[in-house]
Length: 218
Image (spheres, rainbow, N blue to C red):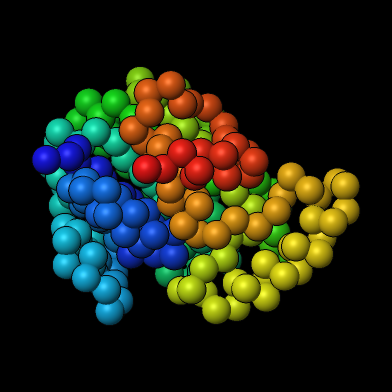
């Protein structure tokens, strides 16, 4: 039986791709998300242990981290919802640190964090600042940390993301943007899994590095 992985935000866009890829490789996967089990018509969904809870309600999920080989953190927001207490600082920074502290207490050896390469157009600077703040604080914890910084990510759960891909493909023709080419959500998920299971990988991984890692999946 393969190792156990804990995916924070496993019902979301990138998180669900991580869960699907990990299940295909035979990992035991536990997912934490506010929504719990996603409404997806796929067999792999039945193989995941879904936990429906707030990331800040630590007592409801911390015990599930025991004996996990790695944490893969996929929670984040691109637009704030202050009326729901969903601010950049709370979700993009404090939630990540909450999971990191729980992982350290459970002696988890590896933390893979899905971040972002740069601020998208029309999004406030506080978005990127909250991502970078989380990255900086994560690297003070006593586990191996790998930080993935994808740019635009596209995939079937977000039909509009293919239009975004087309726009970024056009922008990538500019020399200054060639390192920011769009990534398929499966590429990001595969790279996260390689980073989670390869002890030689740590630090910040940019878009080309993510694509290279995804090609190393069995």
